[in-house]
Amino acid sequence: MKLIGIILSVLAFSILIISHELGHFLLAKMNGIYVEEFSVGMGPTLLSWQGKETRYSLKAFPFGGSCMMMGEDENSSDERAFGNKGVLARISVLAAGPAFNFILSFILAVIVLGSMGIDDPVLSGVLNGYPAEEAGMQAGDRLVKLNSEKIHVYRDVILYLTIHAGEPLDVVYERDGELLQTQITPKFSEEYDTYMMGIEVSSERVRKGLLETLGYGLNEVAYWIRYTLISLKMMISGQVSVQDVSGPVGMVSTMTDMVEESSTSGLFYIFVNLANVCILLSANLGVLNLLPLPALDGGRLLFCLIELVRGKPVKQEFEAVVHAIGLMMLLGFSMLILFKDIWQLAG
Image 1 (tube, rainbow, N blue to C red):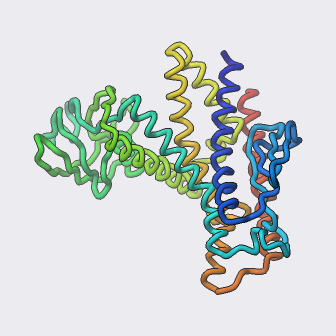
Image 2: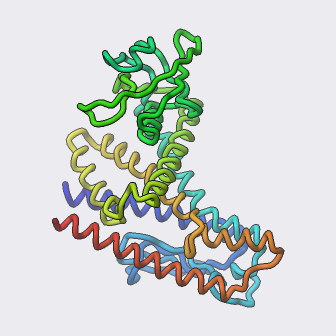
């Protein structure tokens, strides 16, 4: 089962990369840009075939991929070169990669939520001696808002309380079709080592109709985008260390363990659990690639936006140098994470 878990995890991770590069590829073709090679994986080429104009390749290491376009990092006189297209065309191509990651997250979210239902933020009870009980909340109440944050599913509550631990809350909830409001200050629990409102929610998931499920699918993607941005903020502020960050090897290892744990429940639960992880990872990949850092899609988009403001492009040679430096830094960080993941697995 271990080998099957590894194969499934690698395939799932590869789908995320293919989705991203496919976004670049399709928009490049739509804008008449010459795509030299579309590859899945990195390193030495295992399989390769020449299409009408684009070479399609499968590389040895199933992490990463690329959509190599003519004139992306160098000058070219060909009218089909990336650098010779209008700025809006280039923006659409660059943004398509992250956009396709968000689309993939949405599709998977709709499938999972349609199959399993949602974690409805409806109270099944309140704990004795905690603020929710003292405020008069009771079983059957549906949480609507915590301060200004809208609550769609129960995980929204968990995330909000984690970020705003111990802070006073203006709680809006629904009871018998009527909106009620109360003020609660979470109480610290020695037993659980966290601040708690003192509410209980059923672990039973609730299935919704098609239109509602589509809406919850959008909320799911928004949740994981928000989660990724919060995690980045925590990493920058030092609340999360490099030790807590995983690269492709660590992710595949985690997904493999999850496949093994789900194997006793059947193929359906293996798929659902893998899909759940892919929703997070695909949204994560989309957000990270939009960061305005050299070598990433966001860094290239930043140069396009500068061009829009200035009315003329930044010299391509300068931009190429900036991205080359960024790529080296990115590869260095990736190697650090890779060695960390291998060290942890070996330990």
